[in-house]
Length: 360
Image (cartoon, rainbow, N blue to C red; front, side, top):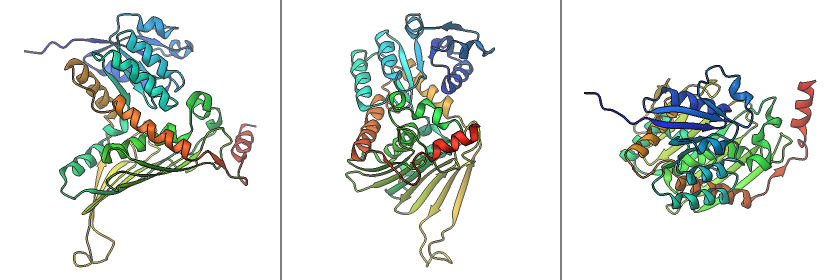
């Protein structure tokens, strides 16, 4: 006999890139029903012929309706207050990363969350659910290759012709640059594998793009166990790149490439190499490797399925939680305070001239 599942009514606030992804996931779910979408730019919704639900001009009207879940997909400057208002209205909330512009934004959200413990709040750190990361985590947790010694991560993109016009590079709206936009995912993965970090060192630079936020971030972390993690988050790699290297006592794991809509980060792979000295291999420092390939990205579905499970089974949110958001934003705030953004005199403004040249 087929089990009857309760249908949860959902609404989306913000109908940009992520709002459209959430719509697709909601509509493919057997237990979610899309009741409404809100965006201050109503035309973003009306031009989409696939939208069949009610359209709202005000998010407050949407959260005042009888929906159960709110998906917050707005720019960083708007999301904290919308999350707070949604919790206050008695709605479960799924909010995209980053959780705000500053650590204070996250603390504001947590303050309201504590007042409504019956509600579930989860953040969109979807990289945790990518197949390469999940497989690497399984291997690490098995302990068959020993403990983690250190981590290295590179996450970056090529900027693009419209980079300067993006709200993601406007400090008033975004709160920060490439570190807060993309680097936050890698920092979250560092915590996912090694827990919290007590030491933070940072170099931020405006090397190419003429914005008021950083286009390159170099972060060095160390925890109480002596494990070290290094991150380069960049908007000047010119080739999109995602790569996390996990070095253990008896092996190394490398997740490279990222399943994405455009495929610009390359095919997602997990490389597993075992430590082998010259008595085990023909060439010292060149051990045999196993490469696992992944061709299907179910990360978006997986994290929403997890969120639904938290709600329907009334379980504590223990993955991509407000605590996770708080701790990663603590790292980012310390990074920004550790080193102000530095420009390169020989390159300052070059990105702006490049854009003007290409636009003419």
